[in-house]
Image (cartoon, rainbow, N blue to C red; front, side):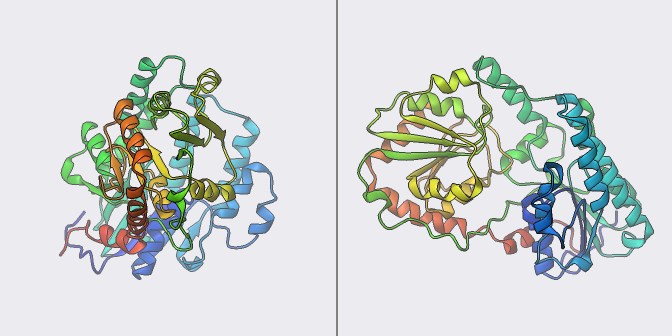
Length: 414
């Protein structure tokens, strides 16, 4: 790769499997008029209503489109992606190892298709930047090493460090996890190869940067680009939320698992008086039924809820809690703040919260501090109103323009 690219004059090629972040990166680049092309596994400009009534393996393809990206700039392998889904559906539910083998198969086949397209000419012109996501980029990255194209791979999560951390938690909290994380070495090897062949590695948080350096990626090679979130159209309940009588309502929303720290929230809730705080835990349960059955009486597990009901939980809550041990970013922070909720979280995710301003940052794995922080919220509700206003303002800062600016700063200037 030549270092002669100018970040202001480059055109960008994006390759992504699925609609990651609602196509935020290609959307951000297209807004800046620097998106050359998007390669993706499926792009359904037509027939979306029909797909929504299709069998399960094809139904989600209805969301594989965004009107802000011109279809003339998109190459999609929709037939291949549909066949891949149907074939795996026919095979039935996979074992843990087979699931990762399927991920690798899809990533490799997608990467080969993108590489072949680049070999035909798309990757040979000057002043190009290639941006791909982990597990689907190795083949084009290898091909582009012999060109002047600057290459970037986006690592969406902290990788192996995160899985090892969860295994430690399972030893600390036996009988809690409904399943164990899988450390499938060929999957890790493909990711490491992508980090090696790329000129730069993008992560979404300082926490992920730290995790990747522990896995051998040079610190100078890693760039932090926070996610974008569209807070428009959300009307936060700021007027009388904290004038209500009764317990303070604390909301958890997301997967209910050890990685996100549910064990420490349950322990903290057990220290609270029922008339002080009430906890609503919303999201798919990845802990055992025995744990749920033994949870404190001030905690309600609602399980997975339809997307159109999520806003009701935000509107009825007073504080959002995310005592995570590891998250690549945790977009639910911004979603909660857009609804006017102060957030209690840890440093082990995207740094969205400013401690004491629009929420609190507490140490991970510390139920005592978590309990103290939430109790202070319940006893000093007057301060929550201003914090809620600041939280809403914070959510508006994570724009597509901010993503584009961060990306354009990565390739070296001429």
